[in-house]
Amino acid sequence: MFLKKLFLKPNLIAFYKEEEIYRVLNEQYKKDKTIFSETKEFENKKDLKNYINSIIEENPQTYVSTITTTQNQGATPSCDKHYYKDAGIDTANIKFICINKKYSFYTTLYELMALKKEYPFIDYLYSPFALIDSKSSLRQNSLYVLATKENCFMLIYKDNIPVFADIFEFQEDSVNNDEEIEDISDMDIIEDFDENLDENIENVDEPEEEEEEESNMENFNIEYKILEHVKTTLKEYYNSDGDFIEKIIIFDAIGLEKAITKLIDEDIFIQSDIENIDILKTINNISRQNV
Image (tube, rainbow, N blue to C red; front, side, top):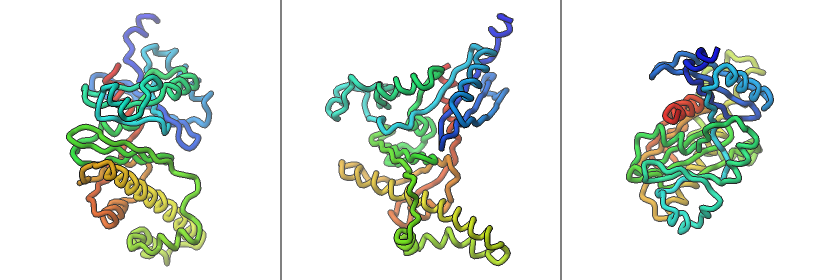
């Protein structure tokens, strides 16, 4: 039994909590090939812990990773503690990771200790900014957006280095009152979201029509909020003498409407693209470099 476990391939388990659900990906690799993959969802921490412990019992070479979505984190274009001090960040209360001796991602020690206490089985903890960094290819005057169901993470690059980071939380109160809906309807872009409904409306029963309209408006609310968060980030960045942003890339983890690119293009006149991202797979891909 000991020899059998000794020659097992490492298990990489990635998880994160979203809308009170723990989403989990368990993988094994042989060189660059995935030889085992399993996805799970759990409604409580106890079931998550039991699942992970069962994997560890079978294979001690198991590495568990997750992300921190706290507001108390960020990115800086330096690894120098003096830079942090000049920026008003107390290095005694943070943990930062230096990337290529050029820039760093940080979070507070309090958050790290709290997460380690809540999930003692964690081996690696990553910032969502690190996920963006691992997949970004355009690193000159570009703004990356990582959109999840609960948060929106912004990272701006200049000269191949992240120079500005921001986080926004999607509030529970969606854009759904009459006054806010009326304001949104004034925008031409709303037609793109209603167009598909209008084309097929005759063959849809009334209850299904109402559900589709509600879903359509809910999706639009998220995209509209992302646009507003992008505008806020750009305003803050430009006020700090940042260079003009030439491209916006959205990493989509929630199934956004493609029309969000038109929404951005027509409102702030910056070209944008949208790319799908698998957060769990990305976490494991980063972990593979550390195992």
